[in-house]
Length: 195
Image (cartoon, helix red, strand yellow):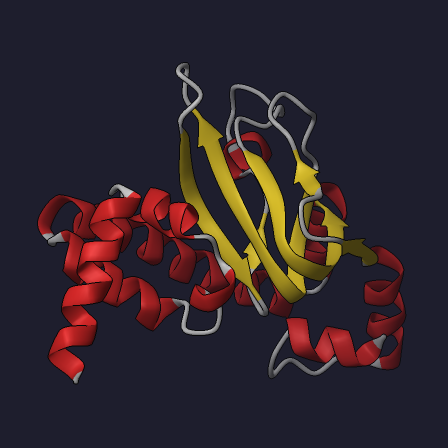
């Protein structure tokens, strides 16, 4: 399993003893397309690293409309962060569904917090990852406020180049905050300009 640790904690070196501890905390999770990793109102205490596959995190509003919060592909972390890090509740507000067969590695928040205390290099690594994630989420909010649907779509295919062909159109449209018809129009316009 040390190869997965090298993949997760890129560029960090660990002693043999540290590797043993890390390996004991990570649990392999296998999901098939259509399976749920998390559903709303369940207790959340795990972080998940995506080794292969693709997942989507989404929220269903009162009318049943889905709003995609995040796609997670190889190298990304995913969980219900409101439940995991928020102060009000440890119950999920979102759903996380596997949309491409996936292998994940989970670690409990308690164990991860302990690793951060015992191995400061992991804490520093995690801070850098969280800073990047926070910047991405803030950038997405700004894009939704300031960019056209076409510009948001182009940024989406730049950010997720490997999943567009395997994700349903309505998932992409939901992520972008547009209709599937608008997405089709944008794709036609782009393809007509590239010919």
